[in-house]
Length: 99
Figure 1 (cartoon, rainbow, N blue to C red):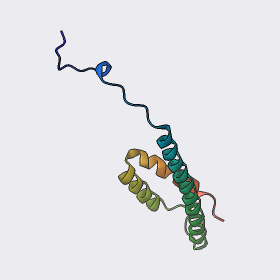
Figure 2 (tube, rainbow, N blue to C red; figure 1 turned 90 degrees about the horizontal axis):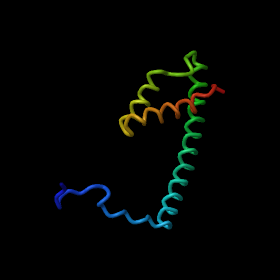
Figure 3 (cartoon, rainbow, N blue to C red; figure 1 turned 30 degrees about the vertical axis):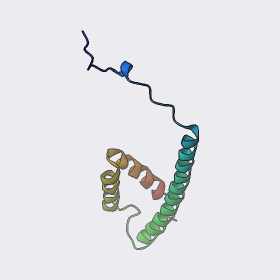
């Protein structure tokens, strides 16, 4: 038997529907952030290609594993485990072939 202090999910009042105007505004903000992120990744890729070319020109390797590990660690520390996956994706985009 249930007493009056037992509450189940079915007893909870439904959450009010979100305001479509607010959702639209927030989606616009997300779209703006996505645009900025894509721009920044493209800028990062360009810098990375310049660094790779300089390193190769000096007789080094195109990819520096220690540097990539530090980047992976930084993303994970700021964003959790999924941050590592994001860092890997960014690194893949930015590795490219040296120009």
